[in-house]
Figure (cartoon, rainbow, N blue to C red):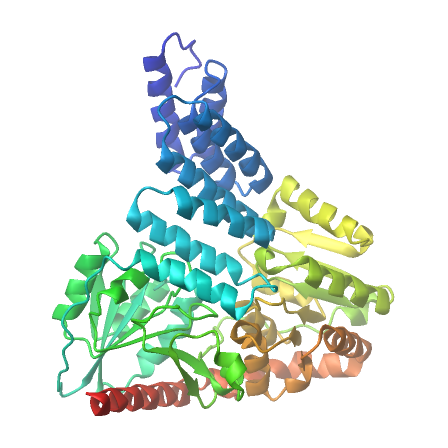
Length: 533
């Protein structure tokens, strides 16, 4: 588009359509240049503001995005024909931006607003699910708070009429897996060992792919499954009817309340037994889900650990996920503290998981360990405003910023574990894949856990590694454990050499054992279902 003068609204709309097309094609700089030109001729154009916000979001400029979205809402409020759908989308984007920045309560409030005003039922369900996911990072949310969120979400599914329940006697138990993450996503990587090791004589597997990303992991999953169904572009009801027609005995939904989940499909009751697990840390909150897949460490012995769940919790005897280290991992290098003369603590977890309480703990840890450094890496820190935002947060907590390094996203991030001595897990939303990656690169991980199921992922991983002493029940003990580990250079060197082998020899990487444990659980719940009937 030439930067010609826009003389009327039809020309403005045409220019907007060109900018929109550039954004959809991923040409962010071109799209931004065109929106800036259009903005010279119009002051109140909510759709243009929304497009500007999308561009900022895709550039990981979340502060800019928030400012644009606030302007968008002001413009929309001044518009004669109010567009509730546009306003709801703006509030949803505000919720997502706050989530990326780690402002959990602001994110919750924004998603709540989106649920209230969204006019389209299907999208309201999405926003209610977004709200539940955002609340996972709130350490002040009680079981009752979550139950209220679950009730709100399930009420939105009430118009769905379940299919007549059926039970079959197939020669092999038919197990369906439903996910939008059958790709290089952590869920895709964690479910692959199970699919590859399923006993084909006892189980017939169906994968219902709700995602649009295809990569080498997708192809491996497709090959490993008995049947592959693409449901990306079909409605929840159509997907449910397809599953129903396949006569699935056990359906496992892997997303729960994460992005792209298809929980409404389960409300149709397309399978005899329905299970959630792996993709999220908490309950689905739905009465149509019978079981939640967990393990003895995450679910714990006390009922309080499982009180958040509407489902019966399956406690696998070892671990509820399996991680096979990639074959092409670089060889772990010696701890950097040996050469640098100071210890580097690090965290590559999602920035949305880093609460002020966690930062305060890390500040105390740096104060306790002289000359130590903190290395944080996430896409947020790839932009100047993202780095400035985190630096301002840390300054308010009195960090010495000269001892903090912020790094943005990079393709070869696995090599950068060589730059840290001790990995620090987050709380209450712990790491998963980042914990596995750190361990596979010889970097010990210190985690804090509580009674809430979602706080215990790191604890479960460390228990399976025989390193439970690195899991702390209190934040004070978490700080003490990390400081003691940092002081033991001999131990750090030993762990650097042996952690990958410890991981490979543990239940976490024993695909055959994991598949056997899961299959036993499937047969157990199936038999329980038969007895009930």
